[in-house]
Length: 156
Image (cartoon, rainbow, N blue to C red; front, side):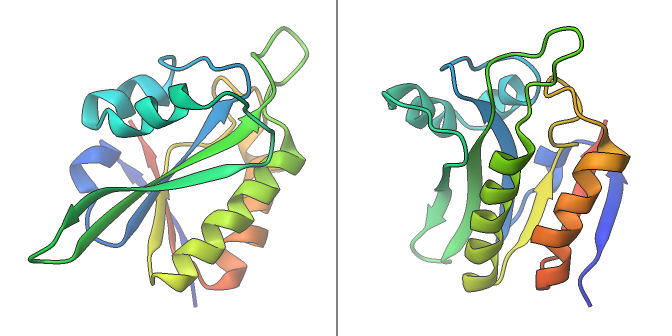
């Protein structure tokens, strides 16, 4: 039975073979605030890939193999999930729940195919403006946990 687990600490210190680091990107080409800034310090490739795009369609997910060692066949993936419509403003959350659901289902299919677990920050709850308990956890349960994907949420 898959589980949703919470860990206090730095996600990047625990990232390992067969992990998918899932995070939300906006559809405006902005990168560097919130989790993306920390991700770029860990590995520049997801940012470079994101910035080379010319369109950012809500609900699309780019899953990048950021570490591949031919001799050991180690894989660490990053899922750039386009699930934020612009930027949050007072009273208007930026995280699009339908787009996030679509993205999480893409991540789930990849994780299932490559026997991975998903690790992530609190998706959509910070700059995305959504309620973690009421809106995001049900999507994680529906799209990942119920499909047999272990998911670990890292909190600093």
